[in-house]
Amino acid sequence: MARIRTLIAAGVLFAASFASHAKAEANINLSCSSLGIELELCQTGADQWAKQTGNKVRLISAPPDGNERLAFYQTLLAAGSSDIDILQVDVVWPGILAPHLIDLSPFIPKEELADHFDALITNNTVAGKLIAAPFFVDAGLLYYRKDLLDKYAKSVPKTWAELTETAKAITEAERNSGNKDMQGYVWQGRAYEGLTCNGIEWIASFGGGTIVDESGRITINNAQAVRAIDMARGWIGTISPEGVLNYAEEDARGVFQSGNAVFMRNWPYAWSLANTGDSPVKGKVAIAVLPQGDGSGARHTSALGGQQLAVSKYSAHPKEAADLVRYLTSADEQKRRAVKGSFNPTRKSLYGDADLLKANPFLKDFAAVVASTVARPSTVTGNKYNQVSSEFVRAVHNSLAGQGTAADNLARLEKMLDRLSRGGGW
Image 1: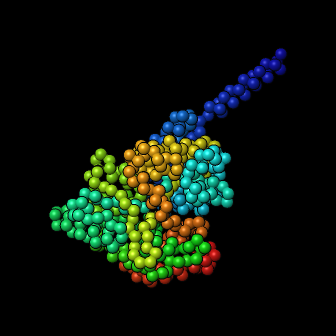
Image 2: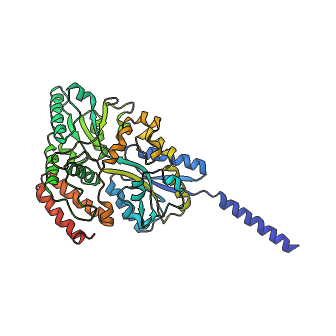
Image 3: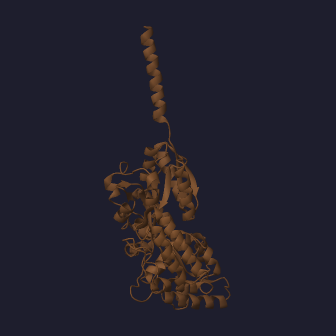
């Protein structure tokens, strides 16, 4: 009898222990960008998942600057830290961070993965493992004040030369009318990844290539690339303020949204913010493809961007973290983020959605924009991409700031990249 009582007691304790573990909640640390309203949308999405699953999510705000965020992640991952379970990663980081991320393919059904743009799934697959799920896709866009173009009978510029001429004319007229703060064109000129995007857009639009081609050959030192950088140098202090050399996305948006710029280069997220209820430019803004250069090979293009969600292999709750990634990248959640924040879905099935097109009219032409994008050379340069980008930024920023000519700086960049790649072998 005593033995039976002991077994029963042990069984009760085991059952209680099992129930306790079954009900135990997972505490997931999610790192989202704080750019614009990203953090707010990330929070509301995570809260909904937590409500449905009984788990908890704590958001960790990462630096809005891409380079700083990557360095932040690399420091934590190199230490094997479990402080962050889910990381929001840029489209060019999968190859850099792959050794520290889990394979998500066992956690997301194949039919769901098939709905994402193929290029993004390919981009996020390293050594046969899906190390990140597509969150939203980006491409650089030209924002313009349609009211000002109408006022001065100007057309939407199709070339950079036309943009320069129109920006000068309208800026001068507006300043003469009393708005001394009016600028012609604002963009991202700070020495960070945003300048890589702007720079590669200028160069590719002139037919100057993509720094390093798909075979690994270094192509940056060419006449068209020099022309593109020289063009942008001419904007400083004329249609663009001197301070643009310290602008990131939010700096440019702040000037444009306050009503003090004719044109702006930015990502799609700025659309919803420019049209919020208290925005001085609400209803006065339109979007177009970025202008092209001139000469042989000139074309309209923009940098391919976007963000992914990945799970750290040091996470204490990889299964729950992967489930949250699946939720946040679901069709319903991507639609909510697109309607509320202009974050372009990575799911093909959403691009005919009436609610989406009503909230973001530019999405009807966005497929064509994505088709013309230029990718940064992150795949071919692998884990050396961050160094490639940093060296490119240094050369471009120095040229814009008048520290050496574009011709000299790009020639030096070519030599630097040749040494870095060991003769193009990467």
